[in-house]
Image 1 (cartoon, each protein chain N blue to C red):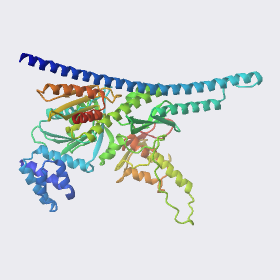
Image 2 (tube, rainbow over the protein chains, first blue to last red):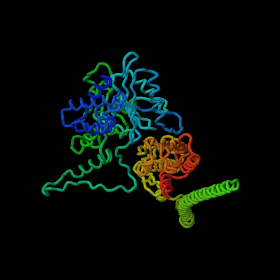
Image 3 (cartoon, helix red, strand yellow):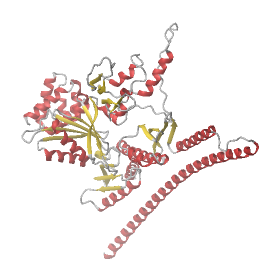
Image 4 (spheres, each protein chain N blue to C red):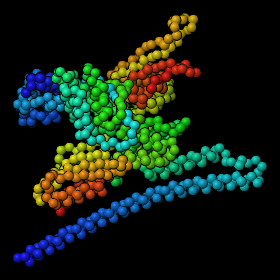
Length: 345
Length: 287
């Protein structure tokens, strides 16, 4: 077995939390159950990984199998990477019969014809998602297994989730391969990025809770109304509180919000000051960047008004994030009757 | 000795003829059943249409009566508007929309008026099993457009909206409902197959988001030997939950009976739901 492969497997196993190593190796399926029984999973991780490499040596593992283990790790822990969303367009109206075998063949062919040194690995999952792992090389060097790009694609959808490696130069080639293999015409990067792959999927696939008013019977959810503990306490602002709750529910819905870590607003608006003060000689847009960061941005925005820290309803610039499927905005001066700002498409 | 051989050949022909006749009968029976089902569906649709038309007729009658009353009043009273009051028109509009919504509810499409438009909910079902529902929030001013929705992204919603939304809302909803119901039906069949007949399937069932292409291998047992069959089901019509193209291939150099079985299966997949087809295989094996 190649030394580089052995080292790669060893480092991959070291990344896995100790309690999960056995399950992940079982999912991998490269080592037999009998072989797994011989490993002591309670020893130091260093030793566990050495044992695993030893067994892989016995089975003559090559880079292809090692790549599969890496995909499995990234599938279970996708939030360690930053994912961007790309949108594809097509003009034709023909029905697409997505053939997985055909798709894989086309991607491989495209990538390999442009770059001889590239490792491409696929893995399909139950929810019609295809995971693609690509290790890039150059015409003169072997693929660097530690600088990989990941692509997640759900068949017959126009969205691709890409976690590019540091090597951004290979991105155009990857995008082209994806467009051709999935029968689309072009692809562009959306202004939507996050660590949470599932939340990105929730936003573009519209899987997050939207409150629709319909006659369709929904099970009534018992809302926990905190009982009045002390009758001597009178809520003076009860109406306002209820109004805020209602408005919040209308905007954010009842269910959990998709998880985003930040929203960024690039302002190119005019600085409005007292003309007498004359802060700026030239009438130029005052450029500034506003970035909201949070472990869970949308949930924190949802809790702002009930906590009394902001008025309800919140600015639509903040609440439009899931519906517009973007968390990077450019705000320019609105040219017209009303001096205000408008969000660029 | 020659006569004995002749006799054997004659009885073989008789058996084949008998089998042919049974096959033909079975085919006829299946065709008849399909016809009756189609007939029933047609009757149900026509009944809904009759209801719709009756409601329209009642509304028009009411409108005519209102007009007539206005006309009669005119002779006696000096000032009487020839046209019904704005209030009456509004009431009539509300009544008409309510009636339309009632009719749509019967067809699995329900709607509710919202502040800025209408919110429709399309429910899907397949052969008596209720499946998911999908909602659309429509705005009606300045023109009809979709504000937000929960339709899966692989359903060609924009295409359907471009064709029908501005001109014929009913047709838009009907076509969208057909797409969603057919998708739900195809997905249900594939899920049922994986859930209940996984022992007959070799390897993985290759499918896609729309469930309009299924490729898999399954085992067919004949004379206590199992043969791997490969099947490719293509659902060319997105509004249909049965495949338009079926290719069943058996291993090379198959015995004659196996080729016939492949043809029979191909035919069955074209006409029956996937899990029902597999259920009939199991019962055929037992018999």
